[in-house]
Image 1 (cartoon, rainbow, N blue to C red):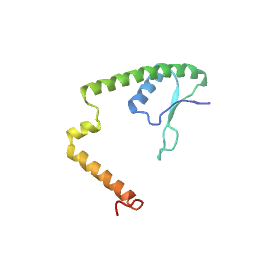
Image 2: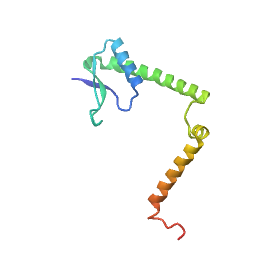
Image 3: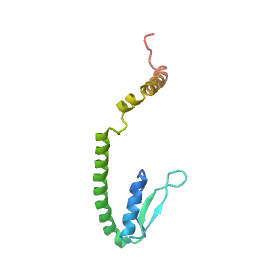
Image 4: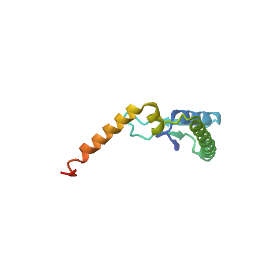
Length: 121
């Protein structure tokens, strides 16, 4: 009987590809299930051989530790370069667009709560 090794829900494609490559390099037979047409099924990587579960799990744990460190380092480098998209960076790049979006959000908030709150009248 197959065993779920790794859920692919909300996993970036590059990470899923790296996991597939890791399993293939270590001769671990697996198959995948997709989320389906409506995205309600369980996407995941399943092991065909339950006897290799502990080995595959240990490989995956090592992979996750190194992947996490690499992603944190990548993020840190982007922060140092100033390439992370923050509200303040967007405000500097497109001040009119940010102001328009904030105005639209405030208008929607006003329209949403106006029937329940009496503003000064």
